[in-house]
Length: 368
Ligand SMILES: [Ca+2]
Image 1 (tube, helix red, strand yellow):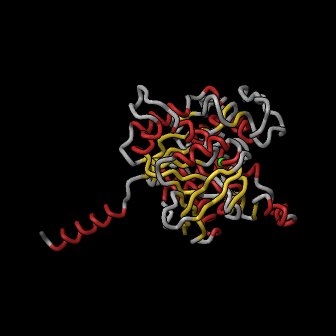
Image 2: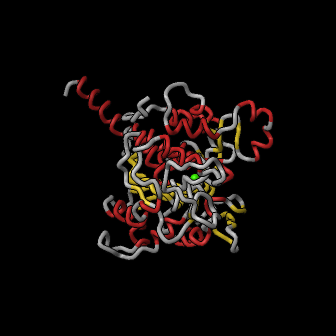
Image 3: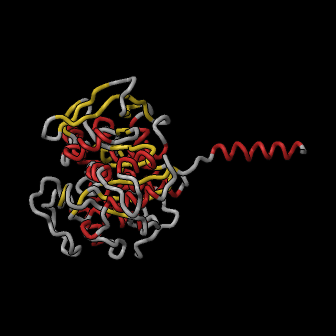
């Protein structure tokens, strides 16, 4: 072999070693009130465009609302409008906001009321602004999340799938409780143990408290956390609360897109933040945008935890009957890992902003 050939094959080898297999991801989101979910899904699509991950499905953890349609609008913007979706049936958070007694009627996407729905307005508005970009205006019409999970998991290699959940834990509980069926001879827990490598969850309050995602369907949270058969990584409330992102895309020049619309429509202005910075900090807004709880979970799920985060081992468990949780440290044997700061949160926010602002490889534009 000539010297040149040896050098070239060395280059080819090191290139091959540097290109990792895309991480196979199932994304599970609430898309019900807060909008870091939109940032998280945008980051996920940008990472998929870059070949860093493969999105297997995008599933809603809520029902009776525009959550699935909103997810599909974002998927369509990134040229992936045909991704499998799903929503829980028979249990879980309903309507436009947690705790709502009555189902708000979202099935007519043209009837968008101003406010009064706990913040869900922004998602129904997406369906109005992007007609034809979604299949399911009402999450209740989408396939059962259990069926989507089981189909997708059964088709994947063993130990290959990362689940990234940034909403309620309802679907994890329901999946664990599924029985063998035509899709797989395994029950839910065995199927998860065989196919899932890792669950990354934005959930729980450190060291103890009541956190939105784990509290509203706390029965499911308890069952899921106690029975999940793989390692679980948490991007908890404390990590994301002062890691901000989204101002950059809200102020980005250029045509409209659904990610920009949501951030532009929901982040307080710079002047407003300056005037009331302490109050906004309490509500988890900073000059750089909204707390990036869900986006940090996506970063950990796709790029892994070592590059950006330090970790602590232990157990997150639900306590009492009101949706509280607590963290029990156990550096040796804890089944759970919570991420803590390594790279500064300001830098993490900038990484998220850059991903959110990337132009999709196969963008669908709004036709304006
Ligand atoms: Ca969320």
